[in-house]
Amino acid sequence: MTQDELKQAVGDAAAQYLLPHLEERTIVGVGTGSTANCFIDALARHKHLFDGTVASSEASAQRLREHGIPVYDLNAVDSIDYYIDGADEINHRLEMIKGGGAALTREKIVAAVARHFICIADQSKLVDTLGSFPLPVEVIPMARSHVAREIVKLGGDPVYRDGVITDNGGQILDVYNLRIDAAITLEKQLNQITGVITNGLFAMRPANTLLLGTDEGVKTLTAQ
Ligand SMILES: O=C[C@H](O)[C@H](O)[C@H](O)COP(=O)(O)O
Image (cartoon, rainbow, N blue to C red):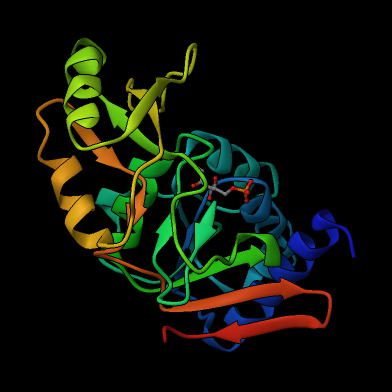
């Protein structure tokens, strides 16, 4: 199967996974990216079964609305049972690197509210050790150079993602060559640098379930 077919397969599988849990008042958390888009398209077939969604980006909100699915402000929502989103890398503990599409901060916020985080990914995203994919760090624009210097002290090589402005008005540094063997420690260290909005390590809040698209079908994995 192609990577696109695997993404559609996990998008469809996530919608099927949710079906028994969709009720009149259910709010679904929806992530960002090409895999999340496949999920949005699959979820649209069941839009009469639930109340609406909270989206982790303007792009996903727009796609949801185009399907006629309501999108709520997170501040108007008391709780979210399920958040479905992709990842750039995920390990066997279901810790992730996210933010290749620059949506990391809103993704982390929605994930923090959700009771269950279901990651949907094709088999290329599952790794033994995080860090081949450069770690995105969202920064306040005036702090970009300061944050970059501090990241160098931590051993990383930050590269400014030129021209990208996030939904929050932030900028992105993609950090290469970081050793990510203690992901929670690194996630906290990066967030403590003044001017960092957040970073794309999801170790303090890993996924609860991974729906992994493979050539043998969609596998359901939990943290090891
Ligand atoms: O900022 C974007 C998100 O973290 C995405 O979930 C991540 O980049 C994966 O995207 P895709 O499904 O397009 O590979």
